[in-house]
Image (cartoon, rainbow, N blue to C red):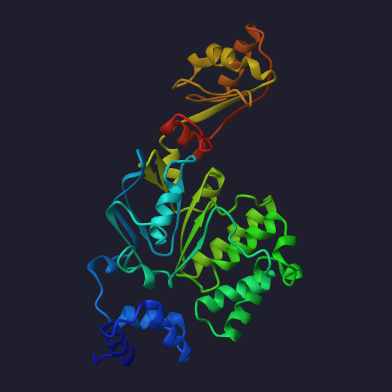
Length: 367
């Protein structure tokens, strides 16, 4: 196979000491599109062995500490192309640290990671042109309008003015902020700012999209809209890695879930595989008086396959159980004996929340 002219140029540019950003700037100025450049580079230049794998993200033994706190303590995982992967964990579990390493914002203390065949440390500049990122907090310019924010992002990625304007218009419509497109962002609601930030992460049609708690601050309609956008992106071949504390979100979207706690991956699998760890059904009792939660748990604990989990703030007791509906009658009778009133009682299939509690001993939103 003869060497592509662009490959020759890239090798010569590297020999002359040009950075990745300088190279991309020169090529886009000459009319090349970013994705055309990347496709040719990946097709014609030698690639490392791991980039030939179907795993588009590969992480081995990542460690990151802040003082005495180990944010990541030997995390390893593999993510296949064209899938949605969810990182589940409470605040401080290490989710955001992992995302920040994979998107080149910080470097690990130890370990190795590649994204789309690029080493996250050695090839950081080139990697940034293939990924999109929406962090936990909306990173938008409040002085500019929504339209100007999106066009600015496009121009920073060396898109032509016409392409940036066209892409901005598409995203304003997709995220339902057309009516506010020309208003300063400082007049936007929190949910609108969040949608704009998510739109900005999609300006370059990224092959891999990182979403750090993407639906935080969105109302139910906004959440469902985003879920559908994610499904559409994956259908088109985009790979999505998201962190979330909304267990329903992982259940709805994820092909694969990694549960992370205190810097360790403690479980992995499909949502159904993880739910099977709980087994049987889950009994959920809601109490009329939240102050009686502990007493209720003590009274009905013998009916469970494992010790009950208490949420005194909600007046709720949950525990895995075997058997069928007669257990509801037995539990109600037992609580009546000790004078505890219930507001609701449910026998249901396990959820990811139940899995998380079983694995960690606390809910996903626990500090």
